[in-house]
Length: 244
Image (tube, rainbow, N blue to C red; front, top):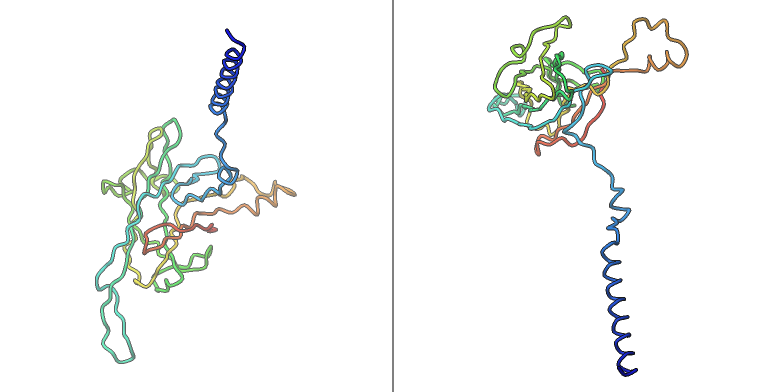
């Protein structure tokens, strides 16, 4: 074989080898994401959260649907001092949620049964003031499961005068809470108050606490989720903490 021919063959093999190494290198390169993408701010999930039964146990809550129902001719308005009152429409609301026992054993729980909706515009005499947020709220509710069975038929009343409901391990129950009292169509947002995000620390005798431990106990307040609902979009747009 001539020297020129051998030189050409060696050059060709060298070029092919470099091309092959380049391909292999490309295959094993890690697929990195930009730091700006991997460190993106994770948005608060307004629809899934914990409801605390006490300091140790919590059930999972998922808000599944928000229904705003327009009710016909439920309010009377008088446009001026001597005008004849006119009938106008109002809204009421139903909130659907799932409650799940996350534990791998059967449980019996005092079911959350005290729900409120409130708004700054709520000023009707039949409403009560929630001191945690200093606005009037409506706590008149109808609570039932997705088959229409009322809460007091789903269990038995316990010593706390709340309905104890049985849950199988990891069982989910679909529920709805209806606020039948209508409110004016002009109200754009309401606060839905229902589930405990923190439960007051339980001690047998607080006089035994001293120093920092006593200070922590006195600062320990039971708070609930206040979910702010936009009535036009029927979506939860924010949440606040409400002291009980």
